[in-house]
Structure formats: structure tokens, C-alpha cells
Length: 254
Image 1 (cartoon, one colour):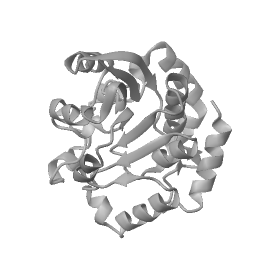
Image 2 (cartoon, rainbow, N blue to C red):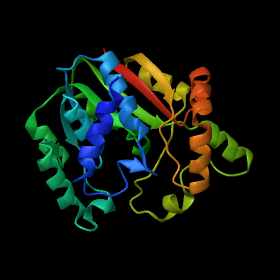
Image 3 (tube, rainbow, N blue to C red):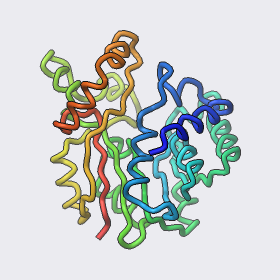
């Protein structure tokens, strides 16, 4: 995997990406960029077309595009964030700058009549209250024998196990859950066993499943521990993927 190329792209995008302190956290490039590139590089050919479904700020989408992949993006843009500080206009300007085909509504996506070899659902499924209905709607955009690439927070990660042992919760913030209307947070996070059950429910074959360490702490003390001990954590999750903070799975549509 060409990590240096990703660093170069991140530096280039940083000069005009409109949302500060996002491509990097505490000076470190987000690990997810490297993980997803590795997944694509090792499991798919370059000319397969991709849809990033629930693409958010289109940071990862732009990186994948600059790495030479054919990729479109979709997000419903209904989070309150999009209407703040003219963020949707900033996002549109960024999309134009990187020549990214971006669908802002499901109607736009449907009207395009596009279908894809690969659909990315990266940190999306945990926000969905009814995965059965949601995935049924996504499947119509996947070609026969196409693939879903899914990342979700691990509900039984090492951090969450420690949190529960201390009498805290492994759920998302209760304040967010109680106050946000409509709620757009994490309805459900997933374990490895959940992913296996999900694949059977939607009649898909698991081609690849692994745990990854994708979260960089923002808290200064936790970040210091992260830098000092991250190599141990990465080794640990290779041995015990169920302890990872994030799960990544490739599902093949039958």
C-alpha cells in the first residue's frame, strides 16, 4: 500500500478543504483513509465503480478519487451541521474543486439510474434505526455479484469493555439521545457476531472481516497514551479482533 501517496493527497487537500482540523486529528492523518485504501487495493480491481453512500464531508471520497478510483458520493445532507455556517455551500465548492459527482438527495441518486460494483457504507449503519429496510433500499444500487464495504463501531471494543467495568455506558451519549430531535446518532453498534448474523439476514457472503483501530483520541491525555501504546493495541487486535474500536466487513451480494 502506498502510504506516502495518501499523505501527499491529504497535504494537497488540506490547502483548500473547508473544514479545519478534520483530515488530521492532533496532527495525525485519520487511520481510516489507509484502512479503506488497503481494503480496496487488496480486494478489488481499479476500474470497478464505487458509490460512497452516506459520504459526510466527502474527505475520504475525494482521497479515493485522487487515488485513481471511479467513485460517486451520496449523503442526504439532513444533519443540522449542513445548514450551519453555510457548510453545504462549502461542501459543494469542495466537490466542484475535486470534480466529485455528489448526490444530495435520494431522488437525485434514483434519477441517475446508476448502479455500482462496490457500495461503501462507512460509519453509516449505526445511524440506521431499521437496517432491514435501509439495506433493501441500498441493494438496488449494487450490481449482480457486487459488494458492500461496511465499517461500524464495535459495541464490545476494549475501550467499551473498560467503560462498562467502571459503571459507565457502552452506548452513545445519553444527552444526545435524549435531546436531539430527530435523533441522528448511534441507534445500534455492532459486534463480530452481529455482523455474521447480518450477512445471513441479507443473504450475503462475508469475503473479509477484520477489526481495525480507526479512532484517534482528541483528549490530550488519551492522545498521549494513544501515541505511546498504539503499537501494542494494534498487535492486540490482530490477535483478538473483537477488541478493536471499529469493524470492517466486505459482503458479496449473491
